[in-house]
Length: 254
Image 1 (cartoon, one colour):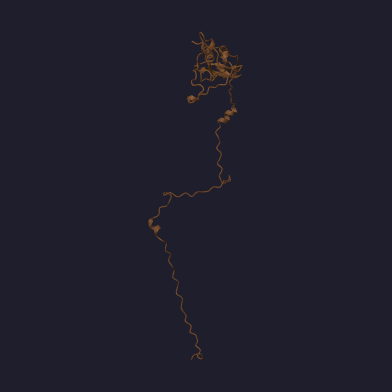
Image 2 (cartoon, helix red, strand yellow):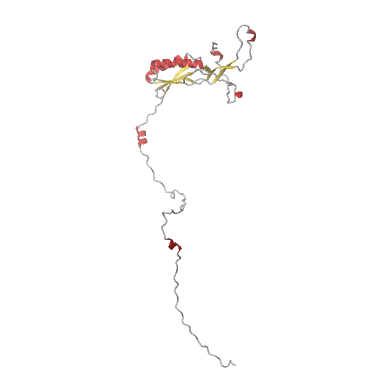
């Protein structure tokens, strides 16, 4: 079995030319190496604990998946042995996205003449690593107030498996307690305000005349609808006719 190279060969942060595409010809890395990290969340996931401790890195560094998995095993076994499987919550805060590459060289008898290679060659993928900056969290452990000592010791054991200097930081979980006045205000029923008429609010209301339905129309007989109203005409009395006789001039008559 091939022996792992030392961490100093992969310690520096490099630009990850690790593009993967749905078209295989456009991918820089055809196959992604398998990660050895088994779990990322351990312990009691539903319970809320009082104190949380974070393991932070003090330098810019790359962590291989081998070292992250060995730190997880050391921390998880110590917590399960002292607190049980439901007495803590343990989480891995990093993920190995970066793909490590190496240019394979010939080895064995008579390989001295072929040991030289191209500088900064692309190489073949050999593993994965997580790129970290200063102050980025690696592990987090949440416990109750009575088990603070066990959480610190577990993170110390995990830091010895990593290839960088680390620090343990305590993080308190803030719990907001509501006062009696706030509780009473929440419990009060909401008073419904009377609706303001639209005319007072300065909004013009246009009433739409809706056609009456068959139920709202009064029932009328069919005969009355077709009948026309006849108004009787009053006859005026006949006026008396007067005949006046005019005098005839005899002198003009022939």
